[in-house]
Image 1 (spheres, helix red, strand yellow):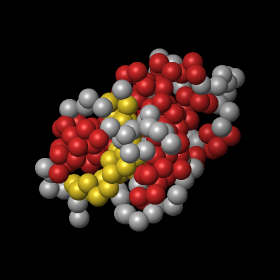
Image 2 (tube, helix red, strand yellow):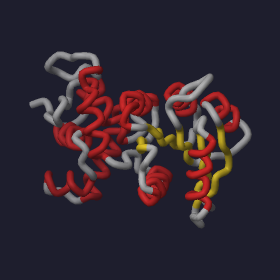
Image 3 (spheres, rainbow, N blue to C red):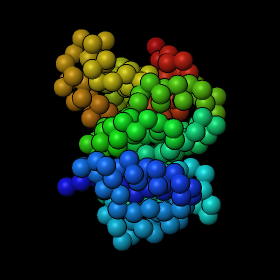
Image 4 (tube, rainbow, N blue to C red):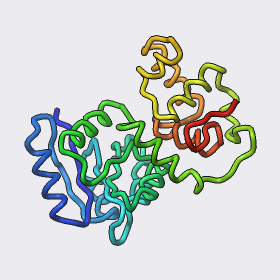
Length: 225
């Protein structure tokens, strides 16, 4: 079955361009379009969607709030935030709202298609290094914390799980983490799964956000000792 995509952007020309790119793919289908967040939510009530490409600045209901409402629903589709360099702070808000990742609007078609496929298959962070740079840039916007992480559930993690969590938050892929810790990728994947379960998080993106918010990882990629 093709990946069912909804395009959400108030610029018709952009939606048209994205639709043309996706329509040329045998494994993708644009099943709905919306000009703002409110229309997107309304469309989801009658249309089954796997991945939502979500703009940020739109009339009536912006993409961040729309993402929050969509991701709060059971069996919600994955959301990819579309942003520009001038709106990176909105992309961070979108990640906190539950988005599975973000892309720049001028992303090459091949990268956009790869991101959609990755998110659909369960990979939350499309470009971990880009997420890290974004969070490093806007970490001053995060609440300050003491020396110890404030999220009490983090205390339930084993020493190895905390180590893996810090590396995830620093933008490392499972393969890179495996190489750093001299583990198999399967073992790293298991650790990540346990971290998600223990912390009640939806995906790797939320692991990154929580690690920065709690102070487990600082701007610049440094972890707590």
